[in-house]
Length: 304
Ligand SMILES: Cc1cc2nc3c(=O)[nH]c(=O)nc-3n(C[C@H](O)[C@H](O)[C@H](O)COP(=O)(O)O)c2cc1C
View 1 (cartoon, helix red, strand yellow):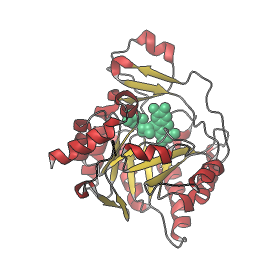
View 2: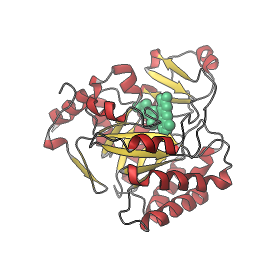
View 3: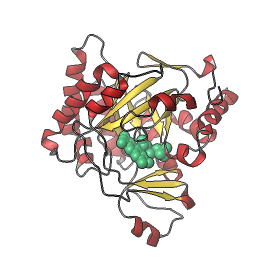
View 4: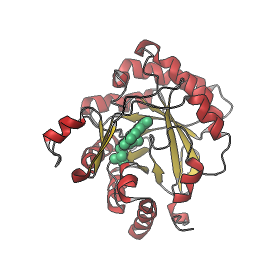
């Protein structure tokens, strides 16, 4: 009652699903599908669980998550810590909310890239009956070599394999691809072609960045923190750039979920105006608190 904004003008129809509003919780917050029932009370239009991998893994040693308050940003090198896909399914079976749930899938750290497809297949098949859409994550900077799967050949093979399995199902599920903000324009052109060729349902842009330019946080502090993916306000401009580029270059052929540095209604509207159909938040939820969801939805309504 406190956080939800109910208004038909916020509804969005995409990939055959009806979203109550366009504001979602990004992957990595409820990695193990433990909190989605409770989180649904905060007024989200959808929640993405994961990234899950076939087998449970501990992730990187702690500390692995750092605040950059001067930049209203975070650096994380969690490394896909999760209890494994079967464990997530156990809890998803106990779904008490009608909210749309996405499943973000990845590969185990110990699985070499030439066997990665198998990991994605296991996650896809195991989650299939328990989520409403899928996101193929090949863009985390914290699993060594993972981002190499964004290259044309391995990515086309991976997505074609999943689509083959998908098309044999009675009710296929939407599959989206999540990309890094560190891709060049020519790599983004490849991504647009691959989405077309593999008939994917859409794109999630973006994951965290390995770029450290233009930060208020000092180099000494950054060195102390070490490697990881940067999220939050410092990612905002680049993420909007990627969304705008892909939306324009593809003539808006597929929906984009815009994510990266949304800390206010204005930030969310910027992403929607750049070409995103839905948006997601993570770091903004951490810094601003749960009322951010309502503020964004009210801001979108005000702009109509
Ligand atoms: C601590 C943390 C863990 C994350 N884990 C995942 C993950 O498991 N899978 C994924 O696709 N993205 C993950 N992300 C990336 C977010 O989903 C999002 O793409 C990114 O943080 C940019 O959005 P933001 O600026 O609103 O945080 C993670 C982000 C953070 C801060």
